[in-house]
Length: 338
Image 1: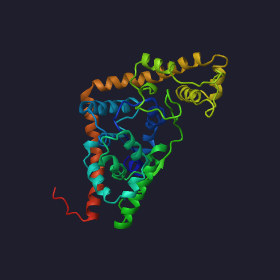
Image 2: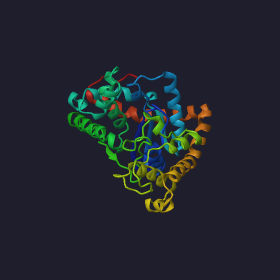
Image 3: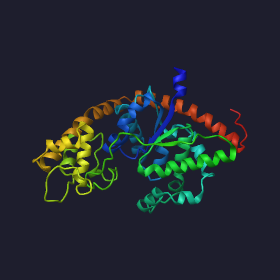
Image 4: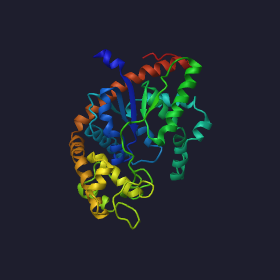
């Protein structure tokens, strides 16, 4: 068993607990993570350190961190097979984040597109954390000597920067960090917003975003109001360039039912959008029902949640500590006496 674990490649990912997980997170990533534990040694964390670059309500942040952990488990991430933890419980993240700040160039951080986007959205709170959080993200990854990091299009730039930082540090001090590779899942739908099908589904647009904990009534309402297309041809046809709204709904329906686009077109031939949108909503309700019910059950069991995040943090910290000790020695810090 030990040799099997040692031979596994390491996979790591984190999502900020800035809101409940949504259908895009689930279909695009989290749903597919459950099967990765057979092939990889997987670490998944609630990125609460990253979330405070934007002002948070403390009680809400705590609630969402625990709710997100419960949702991870409900989506199939078995705590016995995956290391699940809360980022702030493993202090090595912040410590290595500071060190990597000193090996990240100002110009590199200035070019980060997400920094520019976040500045535009938070003009009254452009803090240092917004600027340097890619260094903390690099620390998140490099602490665990991750081989792979699941990334979407919007995170590729950060993965490249992490690689650059790792190579730079290794060139100065010798082999210290494993240089990670982006992991592009073979499966996983790109889910767009229901009210704006040209942008990814986002927590920032709650009316166009289906959350995993939404009630069946709320999900049905959102799909009935979903934007289709302003064409005169009210037929269900997969044509993303011409009909992005319908194409998005078809992608969602395909992801939760397993039906091909051709099968969906045949199923709704001659029925129009009035029949299609409620059908997509109903399919999503049934797909998310077991996830929502299990997440609610887990959230009510506070002792179990505490056990999961405590054990996860202990395991993560043991791994992170080995890397940090090596880094401290490399940069010339006096060895800690305890």
